[in-house]
Length: 360
Image 1 (cartoon, helix red, strand yellow):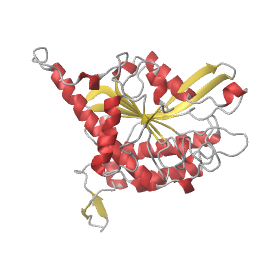
Image 2: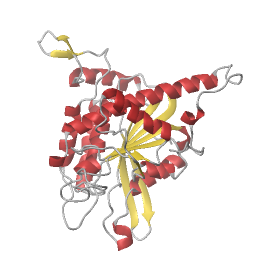
Image 3: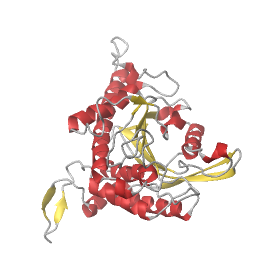
Image 4: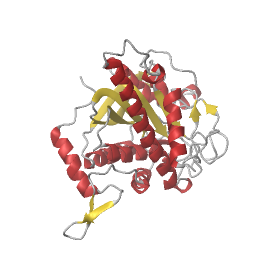
Protein backbone atom coordinates (compact mmCIF):
# COMPACT_ATOMS: atom_id res chain seq x y z
CA UNK A 1 0.00 0.00 0.00
CA UNK A 2 1.46 3.39 -0.90
CA UNK A 3 2.35 5.74 1.90
CA UNK A 4 0.23 8.55 0.51
CA UNK A 5 -1.94 9.22 -2.49
CA UNK A 6 -0.32 11.03 -5.44
CA UNK A 7 -1.43 14.57 -6.19
CA UNK A 8 -3.87 14.67 -9.05
CA UNK A 9 -4.17 17.32 -11.73
CA UNK A 10 -7.34 18.51 -10.03
CA UNK A 11 -5.44 19.15 -6.82
CA UNK A 12 -2.74 21.03 -8.73
CA UNK A 13 -5.49 23.26 -10.12
CA UNK A 14 -6.91 23.67 -6.62
CA UNK A 15 -3.51 24.78 -5.39
CA UNK A 16 -3.40 27.51 -8.02
CA UNK A 17 -6.94 28.64 -7.24
CA UNK A 18 -6.14 28.57 -3.52
CA UNK A 19 -3.08 30.71 -4.13
CA UNK A 20 -5.27 33.41 -5.66
CA UNK A 21 -7.53 33.33 -2.62
CA UNK A 22 -4.93 33.08 0.12
CA UNK A 23 -2.19 35.41 -1.06
CA UNK A 24 1.51 34.66 -0.76
CA UNK A 25 3.23 37.22 1.41
CA UNK A 26 5.40 38.37 -1.52
CA UNK A 27 5.29 41.54 -3.66
CA UNK A 28 1.68 42.37 -4.69
CA UNK A 29 0.48 42.35 -8.30
CA UNK A 30 -1.59 45.16 -9.81
CA UNK A 31 -5.04 45.51 -8.19
CA UNK A 32 -7.97 43.45 -9.45
CA UNK A 33 -11.02 45.24 -10.91
CA UNK A 34 -12.47 45.25 -7.37
CA UNK A 35 -9.45 47.17 -6.11
CA UNK A 36 -8.01 44.27 -4.07
CA UNK A 37 -4.34 43.33 -4.66
CA UNK A 38 -3.79 40.10 -6.57
CA UNK A 39 -1.03 37.58 -6.02
CA UNK A 40 1.76 37.39 -8.55
CA UNK A 41 1.55 33.66 -9.31
CA UNK A 42 4.72 33.81 -11.43
CA UNK A 43 6.93 34.63 -8.43
CA UNK A 44 7.99 32.05 -5.83
CA UNK A 45 6.08 32.36 -2.58
CA UNK A 46 8.07 33.82 0.27
CA UNK A 47 8.03 32.41 3.80
CA UNK A 48 5.64 34.50 5.89
CA UNK A 49 6.43 34.79 9.60
CA UNK A 50 2.96 36.25 10.12
CA UNK A 51 1.31 33.13 8.72
CA UNK A 52 3.59 30.81 10.68
CA UNK A 53 2.90 32.81 13.84
CA UNK A 54 -0.87 32.59 13.28
CA UNK A 55 -0.52 28.79 13.09
CA UNK A 56 1.46 28.82 16.33
CA UNK A 57 -1.22 30.90 18.04
CA UNK A 58 -3.99 28.62 16.79
CA UNK A 59 -2.26 25.42 17.92
CA UNK A 60 -1.36 26.98 21.26
CA UNK A 61 -4.97 28.07 21.84
CA UNK A 62 -6.02 24.40 21.72
CA UNK A 63 -4.24 23.82 25.03
CA UNK A 64 -2.44 20.54 25.81
CA UNK A 65 -2.36 18.13 22.86
CA UNK A 66 -1.46 14.92 24.65
CA UNK A 67 -1.51 11.94 22.29
CA UNK A 68 -4.97 10.36 22.23
CA UNK A 69 -6.69 13.41 23.73
CA UNK A 70 -9.33 15.73 22.30
CA UNK A 71 -6.64 18.42 22.07
CA UNK A 72 -4.56 16.22 19.77
CA UNK A 73 -7.64 15.49 17.66
CA UNK A 74 -8.39 19.21 17.36
CA UNK A 75 -4.79 19.83 16.30
CA UNK A 76 -5.10 17.23 13.53
CA UNK A 77 -8.28 18.89 12.33
CA UNK A 78 -6.58 22.28 12.23
CA UNK A 79 -3.54 20.93 10.36
CA UNK A 80 -5.79 19.12 7.87
CA UNK A 81 -7.82 22.27 7.15
CA UNK A 82 -4.69 24.32 6.52
CA UNK A 83 -3.17 21.75 4.16
CA UNK A 84 -6.42 21.42 2.24
CA UNK A 85 -6.61 25.22 1.96
CA UNK A 86 -3.20 25.08 0.26
CA UNK A 87 -4.60 22.60 -2.28
CA UNK A 88 -2.71 19.63 -0.88
CA UNK A 89 -3.91 16.06 -0.30
CA UNK A 90 -4.09 14.88 3.28
CA UNK A 91 -3.79 11.43 4.77
CA UNK A 92 -3.97 10.32 8.38
CA UNK A 93 -1.54 7.50 9.14
CA UNK A 94 -2.37 5.23 12.07
CA UNK A 95 0.54 3.39 13.71
CA UNK A 96 -0.67 1.10 16.52
CA UNK A 97 2.03 -0.57 18.62
CA UNK A 98 2.41 -2.56 21.81
CA UNK A 99 4.64 -0.71 24.29
CA UNK A 100 6.30 -2.78 26.97
CA UNK A 101 5.11 -1.71 30.40
CA UNK A 102 2.34 0.44 28.92
CA UNK A 103 0.24 -1.75 26.64
CA UNK A 104 -1.42 -1.00 23.33
CA UNK A 105 -1.05 2.54 21.95
CA UNK A 106 -1.89 4.15 18.62
CA UNK A 107 -0.51 7.33 17.10
CA UNK A 108 -2.19 9.38 14.39
CA UNK A 109 0.14 11.24 12.04
CA UNK A 110 -1.04 13.75 9.42
CA UNK A 111 0.80 13.64 6.09
CA UNK A 112 0.79 15.44 2.78
CA UNK A 113 2.86 15.13 -0.37
CA UNK A 114 4.07 17.48 -3.09
CA UNK A 115 5.10 15.65 -6.25
CA UNK A 116 8.58 16.43 -7.57
CA UNK A 117 10.46 15.60 -10.75
CA UNK A 118 11.95 12.57 -9.01
CA UNK A 119 9.89 10.07 -6.99
CA UNK A 120 12.71 9.90 -4.44
CA UNK A 121 11.90 11.67 -1.22
CA UNK A 122 12.59 14.72 0.84
CA UNK A 123 10.79 14.04 4.15
CA UNK A 124 10.06 16.91 6.56
CA UNK A 125 8.93 15.98 10.08
CA UNK A 126 7.58 17.95 13.03
CA UNK A 127 5.63 16.92 16.15
CA UNK A 128 2.26 18.44 16.93
CA UNK A 129 1.48 16.77 20.26
CA UNK A 130 2.52 17.71 23.79
CA UNK A 131 4.06 15.69 26.57
CA UNK A 132 2.11 14.91 29.72
CA UNK A 133 3.02 16.30 33.13
CA UNK A 134 0.85 15.41 36.10
CA UNK A 135 1.87 18.50 38.09
CA UNK A 136 0.75 21.16 35.59
CA UNK A 137 -0.93 21.78 32.25
CA UNK A 138 1.80 21.71 29.60
CA UNK A 139 0.98 23.84 26.53
CA UNK A 140 4.03 22.83 24.51
CA UNK A 141 4.18 26.00 22.40
CA UNK A 142 7.88 25.76 21.59
CA UNK A 143 8.17 22.01 22.15
CA UNK A 144 5.39 20.52 20.06
CA UNK A 145 3.66 23.40 18.23
CA UNK A 146 6.50 25.47 16.74
CA UNK A 147 7.75 22.84 14.30
CA UNK A 148 4.20 22.11 13.14
CA UNK A 149 3.52 25.83 12.61
CA UNK A 150 6.70 26.14 10.56
CA UNK A 151 5.87 23.05 8.48
CA UNK A 152 2.39 24.38 7.68
CA UNK A 153 3.89 27.55 6.25
CA UNK A 154 6.54 25.57 4.37
CA UNK A 155 3.75 23.46 2.85
CA UNK A 156 2.04 26.59 1.51
CA UNK A 157 5.28 27.96 0.09
CA UNK A 158 6.41 24.69 -1.50
CA UNK A 159 3.01 23.57 -2.88
CA UNK A 160 3.19 25.34 -6.28
CA UNK A 161 6.95 24.94 -6.80
CA UNK A 162 8.66 22.72 -9.34
CA UNK A 163 10.61 20.56 -6.90
CA UNK A 164 13.48 18.23 -7.83
CA UNK A 165 12.30 15.58 -5.36
CA UNK A 166 8.90 14.50 -4.15
CA UNK A 167 8.44 16.15 -0.76
CA UNK A 168 6.46 14.64 2.10
CA UNK A 169 5.55 16.63 5.18
CA UNK A 170 4.51 14.60 8.20
CA UNK A 171 3.05 16.03 11.40
CA UNK A 172 4.03 13.41 13.95
CA UNK A 173 1.99 12.24 16.92
CA UNK A 174 3.47 10.60 20.01
CA UNK A 175 6.70 12.59 20.33
CA UNK A 176 5.97 14.17 23.72
CA UNK A 177 6.82 12.80 27.14
CA UNK A 178 4.76 9.73 27.94
CA UNK A 179 4.34 10.88 31.54
CA UNK A 180 2.83 7.74 32.98
CA UNK A 181 3.96 4.33 34.17
CA UNK A 182 6.95 3.60 36.36
CA UNK A 183 9.91 5.93 36.65
CA UNK A 184 11.60 4.12 33.77
CA UNK A 185 8.66 4.98 31.48
CA UNK A 186 7.75 8.51 32.54
CA UNK A 187 10.37 10.22 30.43
CA UNK A 188 10.00 8.08 27.32
CA UNK A 189 9.57 10.14 24.16
CA UNK A 190 9.76 9.82 20.36
CA UNK A 191 7.52 6.74 20.33
CA UNK A 192 5.50 8.15 17.42
CA UNK A 193 8.49 8.67 15.11
CA UNK A 194 9.73 5.18 16.00
CA UNK A 195 6.41 3.70 14.91
CA UNK A 196 6.36 5.87 11.78
CA UNK A 197 9.90 4.82 10.81
CA UNK A 198 8.96 1.17 11.29
CA UNK A 199 5.87 1.59 9.09
CA UNK A 200 7.85 3.29 6.32
CA UNK A 201 10.47 0.56 6.49
CA UNK A 202 7.79 -2.09 6.09
CA UNK A 203 6.51 -0.22 3.03
CA UNK A 204 10.00 -0.14 1.52
CA UNK A 205 10.24 3.64 1.56
CA UNK A 206 13.33 4.29 3.65
CA UNK A 207 15.78 3.71 0.80
CA UNK A 208 13.97 6.36 -1.23
CA UNK A 209 14.82 9.10 1.28
CA UNK A 210 17.40 11.58 -0.03
CA UNK A 211 16.93 13.99 2.87
CA UNK A 212 15.00 13.71 6.14
CA UNK A 213 14.62 16.93 8.10
CA UNK A 214 13.22 17.07 11.64
CA UNK A 215 12.24 20.46 13.11
CA UNK A 216 11.09 21.30 16.64
CA UNK A 217 11.63 24.00 19.27
CA UNK A 218 12.09 26.77 16.69
CA UNK A 219 10.21 29.75 18.15
CA UNK A 220 12.29 30.65 21.21
CA UNK A 221 12.72 34.44 21.35
CA UNK A 222 16.42 33.80 22.03
CA UNK A 223 16.75 31.07 19.43
CA UNK A 224 20.08 29.31 18.86
CA UNK A 225 19.88 26.23 16.63
CA UNK A 226 22.07 23.37 17.84
CA UNK A 227 24.67 21.86 15.51
CA UNK A 228 23.62 18.25 15.71
CA UNK A 229 26.41 15.72 15.84
CA UNK A 230 24.16 13.00 14.44
CA UNK A 231 23.07 14.94 11.35
CA UNK A 232 24.56 14.39 7.89
CA UNK A 233 27.54 16.71 7.78
CA UNK A 234 27.18 18.23 4.29
CA UNK A 235 23.42 18.65 4.49
CA UNK A 236 23.61 20.13 8.00
CA UNK A 237 26.23 22.69 6.98
CA UNK A 238 24.04 23.92 4.12
CA UNK A 239 21.75 25.40 6.77
CA UNK A 240 24.63 27.36 8.29
CA UNK A 241 25.74 28.54 4.84
CA UNK A 242 22.19 29.63 4.07
CA UNK A 243 22.02 31.49 7.39
CA UNK A 244 25.24 33.34 6.60
CA UNK A 245 23.96 34.29 3.14
CA UNK A 246 20.64 35.53 4.55
CA UNK A 247 22.08 37.33 7.57
CA UNK A 248 20.53 34.89 10.07
CA UNK A 249 23.68 34.07 12.02
CA UNK A 250 22.06 34.94 15.35
CA UNK A 251 19.79 31.93 14.95
CA UNK A 252 22.52 29.75 13.41
CA UNK A 253 25.73 30.93 15.16
CA UNK A 254 28.84 30.16 13.06
CA UNK A 255 30.81 29.06 16.10
CA UNK A 256 28.08 26.84 17.50
CA UNK A 257 29.53 23.71 19.10
CA UNK A 258 28.31 20.21 18.39
CA UNK A 259 25.54 18.54 20.41
CA UNK A 260 23.74 15.20 20.29
CA UNK A 261 20.21 16.41 19.59
CA UNK A 262 17.22 14.29 20.56
CA UNK A 263 14.53 14.65 17.90
CA UNK A 264 12.38 12.71 15.44
CA UNK A 265 15.28 12.06 13.04
CA UNK A 266 16.91 9.57 15.40
CA UNK A 267 14.26 6.91 14.85
CA UNK A 268 15.11 6.95 11.14
CA UNK A 269 18.87 7.08 11.65
CA UNK A 270 18.58 4.00 13.85
CA UNK A 271 16.99 2.20 10.88
CA UNK A 272 19.84 3.08 8.56
CA UNK A 273 18.66 6.36 7.05
CA UNK A 274 21.85 8.44 6.83
CA UNK A 275 20.89 11.77 5.17
CA UNK A 276 19.13 13.15 8.26
CA UNK A 277 19.22 16.68 9.70
CA UNK A 278 17.76 18.01 12.96
CA UNK A 279 16.95 21.70 13.29
CA UNK A 280 16.26 22.21 17.00
CA UNK A 281 17.00 24.84 19.64
CA UNK A 282 18.06 22.74 22.62
CA UNK A 283 18.12 25.56 25.22
CA UNK A 284 14.69 27.18 25.53
CA UNK A 285 15.23 30.50 27.28
CA UNK A 286 18.88 30.97 26.39
CA UNK A 287 20.34 29.10 29.35
CA UNK A 288 22.34 25.87 29.08
CA UNK A 289 20.37 22.92 27.63
CA UNK A 290 17.52 22.20 28.07
CA UNK A 291 16.92 25.84 29.00
CA UNK A 292 14.96 27.68 31.67
CA UNK A 293 11.52 27.10 30.16
CA UNK A 294 11.84 23.54 28.82
CA UNK A 295 9.29 21.05 30.20
CA UNK A 296 7.68 23.71 32.43
CA UNK A 297 4.55 25.85 32.52
CA UNK A 298 6.71 28.56 30.95
CA UNK A 299 6.68 26.81 27.56
CA UNK A 300 4.25 29.50 26.49
CA UNK A 301 3.87 31.91 23.61
CA UNK A 302 5.09 34.84 25.73
CA UNK A 303 8.64 33.46 25.43
CA UNK A 304 8.43 33.00 21.65
CA UNK A 305 8.87 35.36 18.70
CA UNK A 306 7.72 35.43 15.05
CA UNK A 307 11.22 36.57 14.08
CA UNK A 308 12.55 33.18 15.16
CA UNK A 309 10.10 31.36 12.91
CA UNK A 310 11.06 33.73 10.09
CA UNK A 311 14.77 33.02 10.56
CA UNK A 312 14.39 29.24 10.60
CA UNK A 313 11.81 29.22 7.80
CA UNK A 314 13.81 31.34 5.38
CA UNK A 315 17.03 29.44 6.10
CA UNK A 316 15.27 26.10 5.66
CA UNK A 317 13.87 27.10 2.28
CA UNK A 318 17.29 28.24 1.05
CA UNK A 319 18.98 25.06 2.34
CA UNK A 320 16.34 22.79 0.77
CA UNK A 321 16.84 24.51 -2.57
CA UNK A 322 20.62 24.19 -2.41
CA UNK A 323 20.58 20.54 -1.31
CA UNK A 324 17.98 19.69 -3.96
CA UNK A 325 19.98 21.30 -6.77
CA UNK A 326 23.19 19.57 -5.71
CA UNK A 327 21.63 16.13 -5.43
CA UNK A 328 19.84 16.55 -8.76
CA UNK A 329 23.14 17.51 -10.40
CA UNK A 330 24.81 14.42 -8.95
CA UNK A 331 21.92 12.28 -10.19
CA UNK A 332 22.23 13.69 -13.71
CA UNK A 333 25.96 12.98 -13.68
CA UNK A 334 25.48 9.42 -12.46
CA UNK A 335 22.99 8.77 -15.27
CA UNK A 336 25.28 10.20 -17.94
CA UNK A 337 26.99 7.77 -20.37
CA UNK A 338 30.28 9.44 -19.44
CA UNK A 339 29.82 8.80 -15.73
CA UNK A 340 31.89 5.62 -15.84
CA UNK A 341 34.74 7.42 -17.59
CA UNK A 342 35.02 10.43 -15.31
CA UNK A 343 35.53 11.10 -11.63
CA UNK A 344 32.17 11.38 -9.91
CA UNK A 345 31.25 14.46 -7.86
CA UNK A 346 31.62 14.32 -4.11
CA UNK A 347 29.78 11.11 -3.30
CA UNK A 348 29.03 11.83 0.36
CA UNK A 349 26.09 13.97 -0.75
CA UNK A 350 24.35 10.96 -2.30
CA UNK A 351 24.34 8.76 0.78
CA UNK A 352 21.42 6.37 0.92
CA UNK A 353 20.15 4.23 3.76
CA UNK A 354 22.66 1.66 4.92
CA UNK A 355 25.74 3.58 3.73
CA UNK A 356 28.37 5.11 5.99
CA UNK A 357 27.96 8.86 6.55
CA UNK A 358 30.75 11.38 6.52
CA UNK A 359 32.11 12.21 9.95
CA UNK A 360 30.79 15.49 11.42
